[in-house]
Length: 245
Image 1 (cartoon, one colour):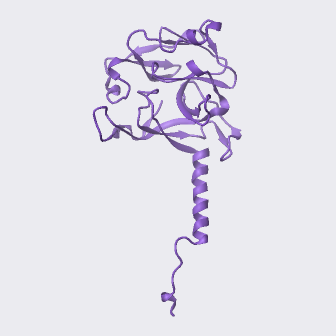
Image 2 (image 1 turned 90 degrees about the vertical axis):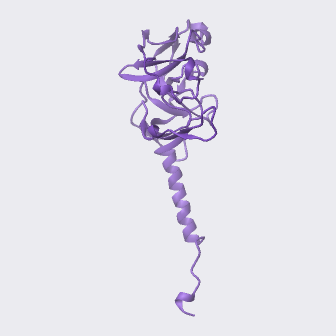
Image 3 (image 1 turned 60 degrees about the horizontal axis):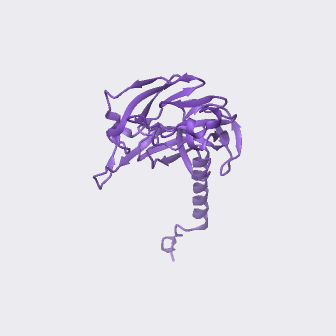
């Protein structure tokens, strides 16, 4: 029998399986320590992050964790005010949340008449109802929302709020013992959603410990949504590669 007539080895050879296993481990390690995609199922960060966005979280933004563990090998930066972070939900650490940091360790936070105060300083808001195009395809009832730009230091970002005085999350209701003001513990962060009246966040379940922070949301990889009166999903082409801030 000639060499050409001999049966060639199939794909599922021990060597191929070994190489496939190594490849899969490398992919998982990359997702654990470097970058990972996340799907956004809720409206809590609209209109900055919209329902149906698939964002990329950069896990080397602040530190390096040993693959497949939560052990931090080395840290080189701390999260900053205004960063959009992916973190383990403090009440159920197996669930990941995405919110914006508004309070740093030691900050005094309060919300009064829907205005955010940090260390006694009201964070300026600029009305943007003259151009509401960013709300055209959001999930959470855009017709009942006001649109503003909030300034957090040097960062300008979107904020939407229910029209009227529906202060759903009032710190004075959550922390009556300290007069409505909350001091962020050390090694922790106070996070809020940009959709202020439709976000369960630090106003209701407290601070995010530093070790729970998994990475920083960088940009939207791609996005699709289904309208309330539709069946087929629509692609948001303008969201591909959209930077988050």
